[in-house]
Length: 461
Picture 1 (spheres, rainbow, N blue to C red):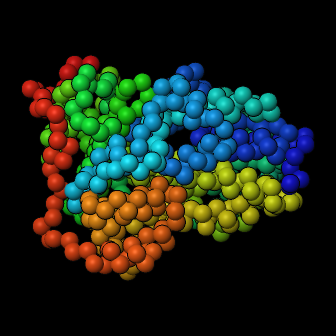
Picture 2 (spheres, rainbow, N blue to C red):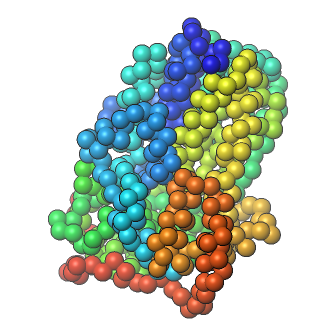
Picture 3 (cartoon, rainbow, N blue to C red):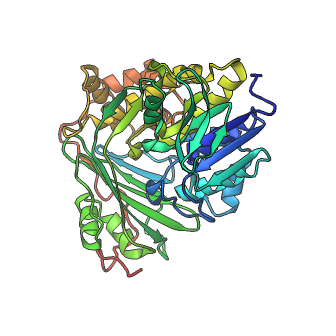
């Protein structure tokens, strides 16, 4: 055990998912944990102002689910009892890549279907109920207290100083850590940037009165390098659904109803239009834009002791790949190990050296995929086209081979490392695969039960 226990205090700046999970870990190592949130926490399952992506389709990878359950035992059962839904990752999801529909089968891998605000609400409820965790909303942090060598607390905008034995910045993509470091005379971390210029448009629906197909979720992927559009249709709590349209390289989806439907039509999957005609919208269409992936290299700067950053304050990933919450959970798990194993004040430096290695696979996976599109700005390497060609072969095989789909989606779900995709048996199958040049997505793969009379129009909310 580290020497951070007893009466010592940790301060977490930001009540994001990353901040909440960090607070949960810190509660096992510090006598007091204070979460400082600039906004008000929602009283119920509602999107936070600081998390606009909460209105859009959401998925938690299996590795993230495992870590959350380890940190907050019983969380999954609580969410299911409160209205979340359980489905099989291979049987109940229709995944339509540019090579057709991935084969469906009983995998047994559970996925919990819920909205981002629903998950965050249940995590927050569990964390703030811990006896040594307290929250302060409306608390604006102006700067760090301390020196270039060691941080000793935070200054609030109203002049109050809160002393701390560890400060954790969970302020998200716009976290002020670099500015705070400069004020202490510390060179801020350098950034790695890859800019895909992603746009979202999402709408919530009640489920159709009668099932349109025998799937619970649908993903229609883009076709690099030219076709930039993706669709997610995911179930959430209480028999509701969210449809998210996503466009890369500035191909931003519309937020008006007529153009929203036309965007769906451009994906050439008529069954989704049938679903739209049968479902009832429950709210407006919300837009969201994401310009860049950003990785801050805290491991390379002379970070003051007793300061760390977590979540999007370190690595902000393209949300289309649903890595953010899982990476935040893995970061919290790592923080627990570092606090247990490290003695003295050097927690932050040890943590960020190890975090950099943990983040690298997710960063490579995300940016390699984003750089398929010619309008993405970022550093391209000689190896990327080779890796992409290999992954294409694997996706081609997922249309007929359950074992290949399992292997590929275990890596995408972050339960296995990327090296798993180069196992000899898998590598051999991929190398023997022959992809027809004319191979296109198999349209109407969803096989709707019946055509809606008003295909292409939406019922009134």
